[in-house]
Image (cartoon, rainbow, N blue to C red):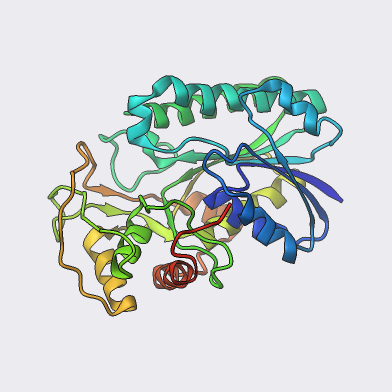
Length: 335
């Protein structure tokens, strides 16, 4: 039996990873979350059908004294999702972001050192790559964070690397590009209401649940809208499952881009939503996000080649699952 700790397991990505790994009855899973942006209902839903034992503990990483709640556990690995994620908010509240994403994560690493836990999977971001780097981004592309959120993630990448050298920890650092969708059966889904990301915002717009406006400015791409490496969240969960198993089997880990290596434009996604929902948007433009790169997608070959991985799910499935979720739960989770 392996003891697994998941931070931020009540969040969007954390809950989907939790659902996948909880199918393994060789795992004993502890989920910690301060529920600032997460929803305990997501953990409860997963727990009811899980093969693994799941224990939820409300815990804030910023308060090191709260780790006493889980000190009796001897964890074999940590999946670290807990973080604040808004680029715009981070620019307005940088100290809050560094306190949460950096200081809180350092407390976690101290706890891991104390209990002699040697394995961590860390959620990082593609936002740390330089706007001057050549597309597609590789793991060796130039890094130049332009906001406190991306800077906090890059700081933690370096801290984890130095900690690994000093205390012989193994780590997977996964640099996410643009995950989307939700569980195919819509038992768990997208939590933020109103939706702030393209896929759920467009779908909620098509379903009449919120006003949808295009926020990207006109850029130098074939259709004039930004291009991003969108991929299904279920593939992201699969990658975490593979990384976790690899660490438990003695793999040293590394830094990996997480995407599919292909870009889709905002208008391509809007047309996909129109096709699935049979709804025709009257395109409206909202406040444009300044400084966005026209084209961002990754070279994912490092992870693909090392683990013989390929995506199993489509963007159309991402749209279909979110349509099902928002029809079922137009206001998201209850608690």
